[in-house]
Image (cartoon, rainbow, N blue to C red; front, side, top):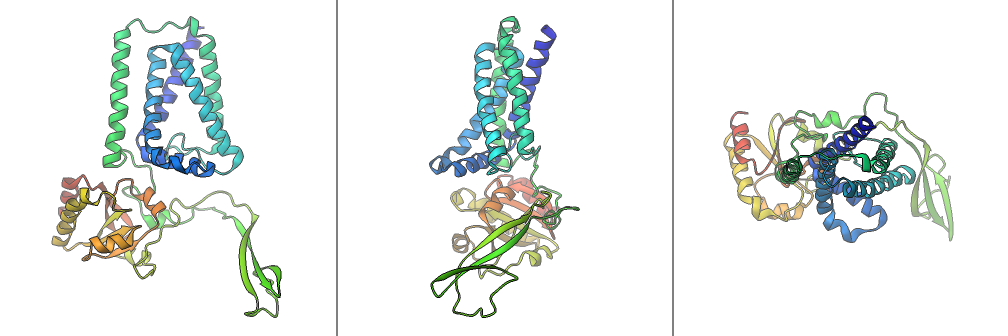
Amino acid sequence: MKKLLWAVRWIIGLLFIFSGLVKANDPLGLSYKIQEFFEVWGWHALHDYTLFFAYTLNVFEIIAGVAVIVGWQIKIVNWLLLLLIIAFTFLTGFALFSGKIKTCGCFGDCIPLSSAQSFMKDIFLFILIIILMILSDKYHPTEFKLTSIFILIISLAGSIGLQFYDLRNLPIVDCLPFKKGNNIQQQMQLPAGAIPDSFALHFIYQKNGKELSFDQAHFPDDFDSSYIYVNRKDELVKKGNGLKASISDFSLRTLTDTDTTSLLFDTPKYVMIMAKDFEDYLEWEGTVTKIINQAASHKISIVLITADAKTASEKFQNIPILKCDATVMKTAARVTPTIFLMEAATIKGKYSYRNLNAIESAIRNW
């Protein structure tokens, strides 16, 4: 029985610690996932608090996992873990059975799990926690209480510090498709064997007060301007195999709305500055100006990518500005702005603007 308790305790503890650490590596990623749930439920008023929720959840997972292993306040921690796993099971179950959320983000972007895998993982943990609660009276925590408290304090400081660092300097381990070394064009291609979903397009028009529906292969013979467009519906004909490109919807457009993605990727060497918005512009203005001057002094092209082209045009008048979707930029650049050193479509370097010395050194030695 003692061996069973020992095994259960360590399995639960390590799983929670691992889960918390993986997500703490990229707290913004978890924040965006929480926003996805809130949007489905219509809880838009809570969007401004999702980063706080993510930060707190990651800290709690790590501390709870450590507490189970060292035996600190085991009965209280067991109840907290039970409540947490019930909440997780509800979320993964909702993602699985509703189909409205593709993945729950349980292990972040580094270890993507399907909704079914996440749900089964939570069921497994739920059973283990129930076992631990039933047998908790036979569980003997460590005798070194001061040591346990010291370990918990170190874990608390470490989990808070890790997330603080990541939010300022990009994730320590970049598991996103826009990571250093990746070729963006290659990441935009469908993987071998991918079968996309097949859709039939149904058009709805109105003529002489009547609403008519037909697909793209069966337009009326007398179709002319007398038909008034009403709507279009996409009907899923055949489900694909789920294999998709790692990067989708990545498009760079000029201020006149010309797609220039391929043209930019034909450039041998350039600095790409991604600034989704300009909320904290005064904080990073000076640093970005130094980066622009450094690149210009080495005759390296510079381009600013943003979702707020109007403000960008007011702030930067001497460098090219390209527009990009804000949602795509959330994935590409966790810090605003993020600096990319590009060779054609390949990311040779990726930095938070706060790493000015590293950026200037990389440009000098490029």
